[in-house]
Length: 410
Ligand SMILES: *Cc1c(COP(=O)(O)O)cnc(C)c1O
Image (cartoon, rainbow, N blue to C red; front, side):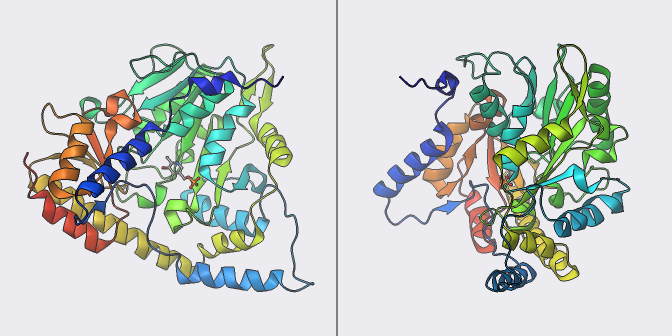
């Protein structure tokens, strides 16, 4: 008889997006002529830039010829890409990263989900609330948590509340934690940490021999000066932090799939006997065993993001989204709503009017103005009373949605 991993039974269903789809479909059936605008999805809509497409075509042609064909590449990624990552994303900020400290992968979702495998099951993890669900669910699957409670939390996870009361800046936990997931600029709140605030976490990790798992998938959207693009801008972070980056939002690779994870050799965790081990070699072992690398064609496409044309072109796309963010933020403020995010991230996190729940606001938006967003409560109990809109729509739809905000009966 085969037995299942019963930890999977602790998971909550993918309630959020299926419930959204259900409500939208019901509304459509009743109102077949309504023109629905979707500002809920966390997916990009602009096509890949010409520099990337050109590099991909070239790489495809190489695969067609015997002398330039490629089979398995290095599991960690080709050095032509790794060198470009170091030269462009780290060296200009004065951050020294070795080639063997970067692991190219098919996504930050896989990496942030898989990284927990190299840690023992007794670690206490800390996550922000609201949170990107991958961090929590991957630990539930592994058996690192207890049961789900009706209050919306898993036992044995330390939740760090983020709301308007603390300006969405998590406070250091009172109890000791071992692994801390941080995502800044944040999905879903669109808010950031300053260097000073991030330093508190690095200091905490050093003091408690904890490890920070830093997701900077939205780094390219940062506009303000004091906001760190990499956790390694903080002194000593290379001893305690792993950083996740992705080409998904930066360069429209959500369907193309390329990301990378930085695991500095100085970062260690311990055996029960107190013996330190490099996480770099554990992650390398994990990846070389379970992963066979990102396609050559895709890595060439990612490398083209760093060419001068590539940089100019992706910047135009990011500017396009960030102009959308500005339009949405302004539009919501104009109708009297309180709005967060949208300055250094493509997410706008609005406070629902007094007493209106996230799902009630979802229904209001859908019925009164036919705009779809994401209820904040879907990202955690502290997201209740908030609502997420994304800047990834077309300009035309964004402007139209903002026009419609004026018809909301608030
Ligand atoms: C979109 C997103 C990613 C990127 O995931 P990929 O698998 O690289 O597409 C990572 N983290 C967060 C928080 C995200 O929202």
